[in-house]
Image (cartoon, rainbow, N blue to C red; front, side, top):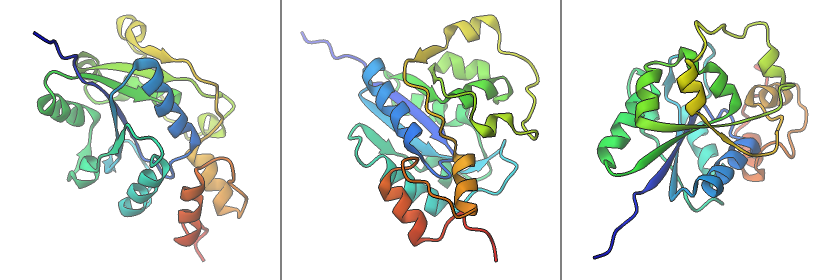
Length: 211
């Protein structure tokens, strides 16, 4: 009698506005260190916590597919874009658990997302459904130090903080916010985003200042 091992499924959501090389590096690191069979990458639909208007979903979805095209374990999933109303991580994880009841779910986070966890909708339920795995990035990233940064209502509980697994990867000072600023001021982004994403941005004139 043979025993099949449970599917190890990574879940990586974000605005991907635009997707950049640190996103890809995080997923590659998670696949290796967590021995993941598959990673679902989910561009955000109507993000409840974003105050700015996101780039059109069709562009973010296309760029995300280009960014992860070289990672065979990745499936870009558009369910959050198709979902109407505010999109919450707990809804996606609940759906995935129903679709893959035997799977082990790993919620992948950048360190910026980890810092915002106390304000996440139903964070306790998220932690029960999925193993939270976070990567570190360079604290010098400008977006972290913006005066408009939201304050968190409370710190994570010690038990939840202790249960978060850390992905060991080099610090990468990449921020989508910084990349958008560079593009808006007509500066180069070579080496910050995958080349196919850079071409897409140029071809569709994204992130340029409004005339």
